[in-house]
Length: 386
Image 1: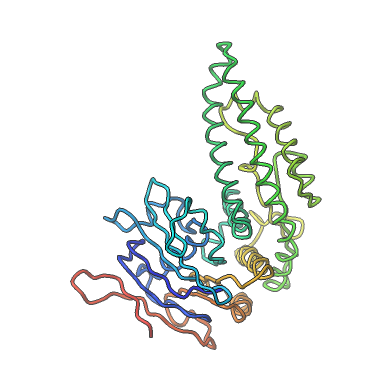
Image 2: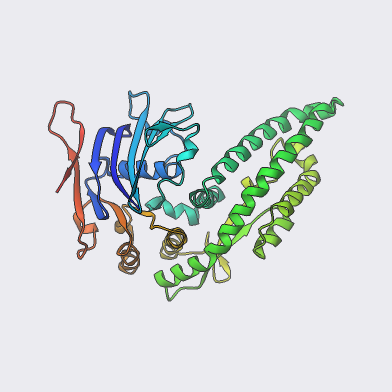
């Protein structure tokens, strides 16, 4: 799989950019702040409907514009697919596939499969559980686009149920039971969608485990062995996940039982305390959790291992995903650079950003695109192939 063309309109700093791309290696070179990462970010957004830099859509729209448009042409096994995505802050995105509108932007998921390496990946190791949950959910969605709908339905249930918990706290003391009866209904919805999401994550973690261990051994052969584990606040869920059990009905029953057990605590706090939105992917080095115990180098190796493992899973399922390397070579030592170069050497398409040419491996035969400023009155951004 590779991206043949990308066109951005009012995306981030770009008023417009139109680039023809090729299989193999392409490097976007330019000073920081000139928009090279924005190109990679736009492609990642087309693949996942999310940014690796911000949590909302508003910053993606160029200042003064009403919307941003990202258009790509993807080639997969000789067949072309055109993807057009319109991003509007505060409103649902609009999308087209081969120029035909689709009902939901989620229908474009899977059309472009990509794996992204970026400096922000350190947050996978050192950041909050939400970073690791997002990693799992994005990868699960790339493999099975229907998971996007499950995630959206689950998030909606959590919002509605949290609002009900807050309002039900006072109603309980007034003897009003109607709100609590409604809560029973939302408990059922949370268990249904939560069980599906947990099952997808557990299935993914089971397959990721060996790949993460292998990648980490490649990156840091002298370090402790790496492992991953799904952690849940629901004891039965965690036990079954550790055994690699993927049973939606079992997870649904476990969630319902835990919701019943913790209802008083939830009503008291007005917070949803049960469900996959509170779970985590535990990363371990030897007998210790990576978070808080890993050195800087070990943290980078673990973060890279997660991305390399994702790449191998997607690759083993079909065509190569597009490999996006956002300014990571400057962050890595020589050993980790070599490992990443080894993976990139066999990828169908690799798109790289770098501030200077020296950040790119000297022996790479790569197309270079210089990102700079045009000498026009508006000072518009430009990209020039060199």
